Image (cartoon, rainbow, N blue to C red; front, side, top):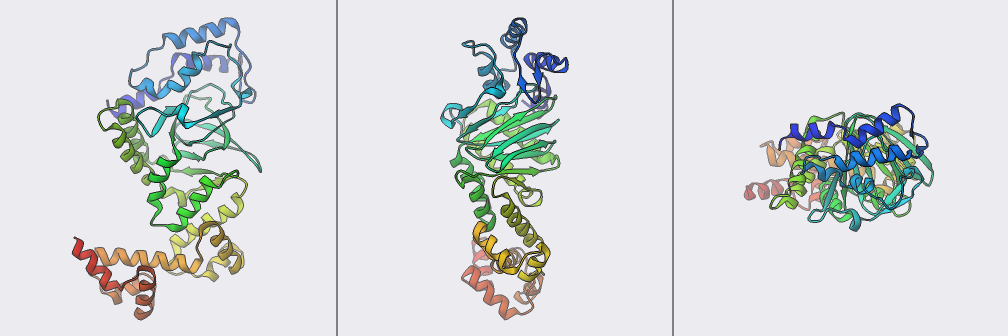
Length: 376
């Protein structure tokens, strides 16, 4: 199975989707605002016939099993999904043998508001989709374009509509696997780790994270590679999928600061914190607390207060951490002297640089270099 095989499958409309598209275009049964108003007896029969006759690739069918379960529920006539309120649990919807489930979102099928106790990452490969989030500060509606993705935390009421031929993939993971794979990659940035931990697990007031990856081809291809290993379910497939998901999360990680948007009750202060963290990562060489306060039009005390509250840091400590992290890279990867590195990371005095390095790393720069050299 190749990437081309998967892309071709993802882009092809299934027979039930083609019927729903026809009804949507003819305004016979579907309204984007009101959901599925009800099919006639003949349309219902036609829909179920197409669903029963459809025989997708036996491997790739795994990506549509949620929708198949919905289509084959003969216990009741089709009802408006928008009228349903559903709560999904990880135990019910997890894929046996995997720590994740991957689903291609059904097209031309109106979404219903639902919540779940797992984390959902929705990635748009082509076309567009509409996400609606119901938070305590009101409704947030966003339209996602190719390369956009949202990270939806547990217990967030939301719905999704895809009323075009586009492709959206949903990655569903238990909280523990997401924590192990995603948050462990933030260990190099304690501020972001604290920030995301609060966003994802802050209780009754979760936030939704929106990233714009601008159709980064490596991100799209790596996700398809993950899909290939997921559907084939070979020996050690679970471990392989975890590694591919780990790589994929690393690829989207830079966009968590460059393009991140937040939705939720506390998004005002959290947006400020995210913006300050991004600013510090870009300007730590030459900036100060006063510069940051002036940049964001707040007092220095307010800037430090919100950073401490939501990220567990102050501006000066984060600047020091970023400078010393850069110094560690130079000590490991170059033969530059400590005096040269002092200037390269934004310090003017070598003795002061060594003092700051010791505070952060509990050793001198030369001892750090020697320890790293001995290990290699």
